[in-house]
Length: 363
Ligand code: NAD
Ligand code: GLY
Image 1 (cartoon, rainbow, N blue to C red):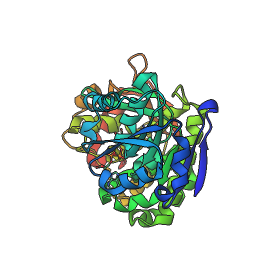
Image 2: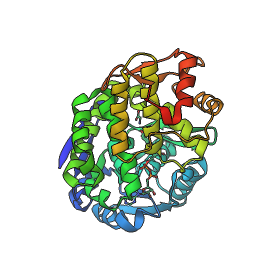
Image 3: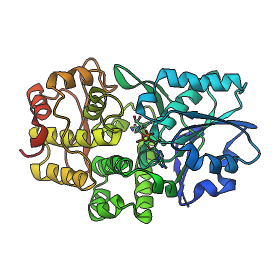
């Protein structure tokens, strides 16, 4: 088992990464401070891993809420179901919420924990690659609004993150690939050696090789923990973690939440960011094509949907949380492994990127 730390002073917490961690009875239990817990999971994950987590909680009095599956359930309505359960079962402020599932369960459960009785403990048990490398770490919690993704939420850190890489074996292939988009993101942001390692190992990762996946989770969490520790509430450098997301969130929303997986939309979004960076003269087309090629080898979409118009993008991107004073801030590239935050991007160049589709990075 590898233990990392998210160094946030009094809100610091460990990330445990390893194979078979859910079966370790002494790992989860010490992080439940009171006598009661509510495990929030979904109809897909419950039959696979709920039993192990209940067992790992030992003498804790556990309730369980099994939500429907899917991104379209990440709503205020579903959030209410968690509050309903907590209140109906008379959970007090000393309770602990355990999020068992992917990013959808982690985000919504974390927000419930942030807001129930003004904040209760919570634990992240991420079960998808995407949630192990990204969403379970760093305390972004929330739900979607019909007008924009993750528009309602809070920064709220968990007590610990338990990433059992063995659970990735049951993950559908499409979900594994979607998680790889966020892994590749770390290489592109500020870790060129990791990007090169990914170029060398992407085939094994796509094949689900355990040791490679564990290494990818470890490096991704190290990078994320470092950036979050430097800027917990995204006043600056944390925005880099949104590489590909401004375009990606617009794709997810335009196509209907859940049609394009988050990681798929981020993959196409990163190709768009690379393309715009070439048009701005900041990276070479060869570098942009190298980024695109790695994403393609990971089985990810590198062409955004044909049906989204420039006007659609502009309307949807205006809801991005990085908008400041009406100006969209983009995460772009000054090199591979050198992402930057920029606003005031030339509208004509942006339009060219939004129109490029099949021709992205072929400049
Ligand atoms: P998800 O939670 O929908 O999980 C993907 C699918 O895999 C679901 O059908 C789920 O039931 C299933 N599943 C989960 N674990 C499984 C397992 N071990 N075996 C078999 N099936 C399993 O999607 P996701 O990709 O994990 O997360 C996407 C969400 O995360 C989005 O809502 C996105 O906005 C959010 N996100 C949040 C952050 C953050 O910092 N909070 C960062 C990135 C993404
Ligand atoms: N996934 C982006 C962040 O956590 O900041």
